[in-house]
Image (cartoon, rainbow, N blue to C red):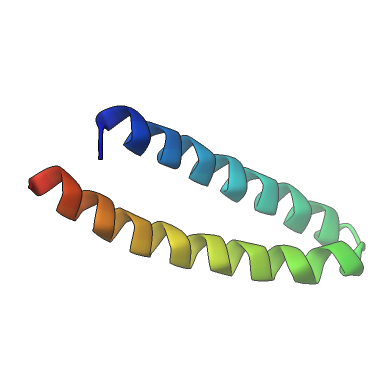
Length: 62
C-alpha cells in the first residue's frame, strides 16, 4: 500500500465519522428515524477504522 492510498483511506474514514456525527446530532434533536441508523453506522465505521488501522500498520512495517 502506498502512502497516497493510506491517506485516501484516512480521509474517507473521517468523512464517514463526520457524517455519522451529523446524523446523531440531528437525531438528538428528535429525529429518531435518522438517529438509530446513524448509531449503527458509527459503530460499523469505528470497527472498520480499528480493523483498517491494523492492516494499514502491517503494510507500513513491511
